[in-house]
Image 1 (cartoon, rainbow, N blue to C red):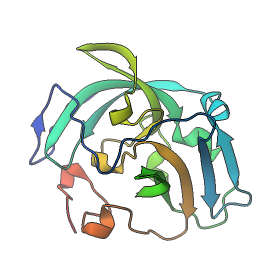
Image 2 (image 1 turned 45 degrees about the vertical axis):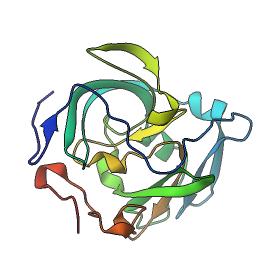
Image 3 (image 1 turned 135 degrees about the horizontal axis):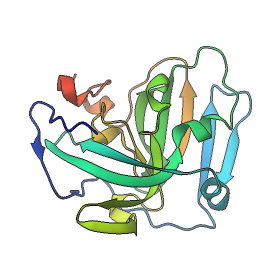
Image 4 (image 1 turned 90 degrees about the vertical axis):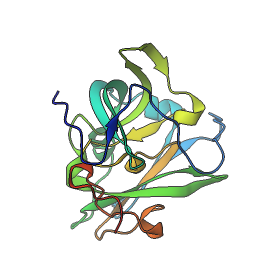
Length: 196
């Protein structure tokens, strides 16, 4: 895996914890994951149904808009494309919003992403991780337990929704949580697309 530091970034050995709002307290009995929007039929998955989907391990680089980059972290999770296989999209779907919990609202946080960029092995809903300093471990609550989305490294990490709760499929792009506050819609760290 190529190790390329985007402009304005520094390399970190640690995985800093940054978030807004309260830390979500997982309750399997009430947790579910919703696939909705421009689809023929909505899908609602329980935690067990979600965790029974095929998983893979992928090693990725992460770049945070606050200027740190962490290379070579391995994650185990469900690829985005496995969830895409569960729905039939309406014609013309090109974007998604990935939702997560924020201050008690299961859809309070969201991040917009282009659908076509999420079909590879580096787009995962992750539950375990390791790096050269840490053996395999479950995500802790502050890092997004029970599930967190990790985007391809061509997006800043704010697109990596913690405490994920659903995917809305869209025909047109819409601003998410940070984008509505002036952050970049496209968020490519290699082009230093931090703000609009």
